[in-house]
Image (cartoon, rainbow, N blue to C red):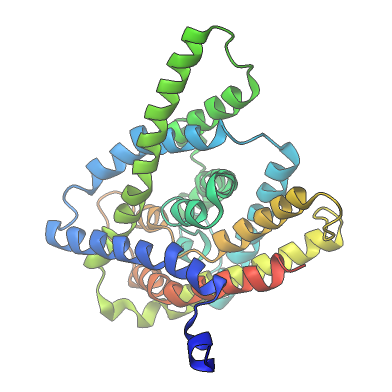
Length: 334
């Protein structure tokens, strides 16, 4: 076999990126084209279908098959809290706007799209276990968004809105179903299996809808906003993963994440997958929900916020691929 033939054989990492990322970019692009043609007139209907039907099914389907690990959840929650708080401080200094009551407008530089992009990518790259960890990541992002994010943008928290999200109750039901014993009756087992399959099908249908929903508003953002969004976009997609790697390093040094393979290879892979999801989540583009909160009801978000979203999406096509390579090279290799 010639050297040319050997070079033509794609590496495992390259195949993983092609299989997991390129098709997702295509679906996001379809969403952008649809949104531009539709002028975002029907996005509210799409969001309601996702929030009240498809996303709860996805969350329940993933978590009821994933063993609950409180230590894992707390690690992810602590990592998310550290990253969001430090990103807020960095955005305040780099973008020249200190947080003060009702006047801070850089949420898109701090909050990532943990629901729309991360969940499908985590499922494609790491399967159901990765999806479950990404759901925990999304849970803490949503919590911080309705507390810290709302306080920065509006001067008050929105905990009531957080506790009204169907996502939260689907998560609780999924954890409860994972902990409860299976029914002894054969008939009940058959009914439970059929119900689980129906929920699983609806949940898998959520994945492309999340990507379309993310791309939906992108076609309406003007390219002229790119200049104003360079600093915020760079902070989101470059500073985010760098900060995540730093947090993982600190967790390892503190002994919270064991670095040794030992005799339990599955436990080692599970720990590394947790780290991978933290880094992958930190590299996600800006959240459209942050843009909507910054805009307020009936208003238009600033050019800096719209530019940050657009720059983070365009740049994210490079940085996310780079982060996936780094995850394979530096996290799973140790």
